Image (cartoon, rainbow, N blue to C red; front, side):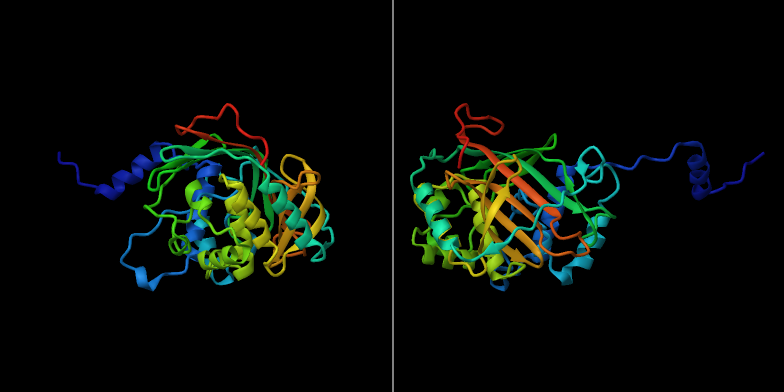
Length: 360
């Protein structure tokens, strides 16, 4: 007797009843953070109509403080980001209870513009006296930090209460040959830090060149604070949440995960003093629990602080928190924290320098 053909759809239905449901693929917290970072780079990137024929640049590495900082999130892009990132939200991710802790609420201490220029002048003087290693072509700059990122608690959207990840170790190897891949090691994952195309150290090129500069390119930055700030504004033109906040953020990015020569580091702090809205906060704490004095900038209700050692005036790390109550949380809710622990130069990715400096 011939058995009638029930059709492929009916066969699939029968198999679905017999076989167990497929698992939901998980994604580690670091990989999810990297995807969010790439997404936000694309959302906030200002198109260069004069260079539409050029291939897109690689995304910048994930910041210690989340690159999609609450202050930097454009309102117009929030809905798009929420839909796109929500599709990544199933699985372990940042929502895992063993990787997160409720965001601490810190004291929103008074901030003042009085004395900020003098303090950053002291930081500049202290930086000018430091000795730093030199990184050559083919080598890698190594930076070890303790970091804690924040994320939204519901559906991985960009609106709603935030939760801070448990502070954890982060290691970065930055390739010193343009175009060569580096490495980020964090949360048990290794992430390739894709190298960008060649770039020289000409100031005009640096104004619009690779997102991540090599140590040689950092060394070529102007040491006149006003000229340096002009270049920083050119590099960050069009970035959210605004001209001054983007420039302040770029200085923190450059200082935290690179090796900066003393004269350039000194100029960076003097340039920071020229940014409107930069203030002094009398007491702040980095991710390692070290206390110091901070210089800060507020954008969209979120304060970003760079913490300096009280006696040394050397950069220790960063933290960010809400200065007013919003949908993300109450005033004082910590949204990010970091502490730079060591730096050095190595010949291979994955190597740790034996004599890495424990200061900036």
